[in-house]
Image 1 (cartoon, rainbow, N blue to C red):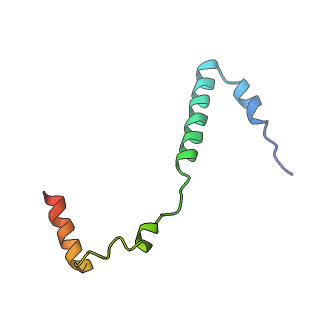
Image 2 (cartoon, rainbow, N blue to C red):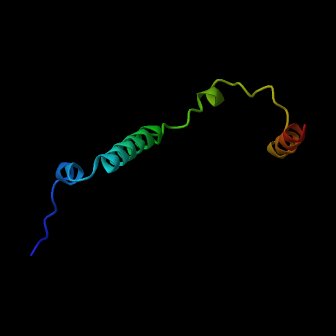
Image 3 (tube, one colour):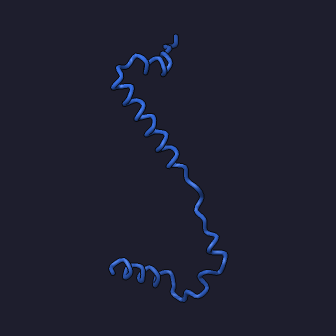
Length: 72
């Protein structure tokens, strides 16, 4: 035995106008949220270009320097 539910459009049609507006706003929010959550892969092509060859600090020294930069 399966329970069938009415189509979404029918349920929305049965709502009063103010609640239909809320449903509309919520659906727009969900669509906007979905479009903004699409992630792209992190680009690291700069690392292959030899951009950091002039950096003479170790990773630990660089972390300490970053702390100093944040404090300024």
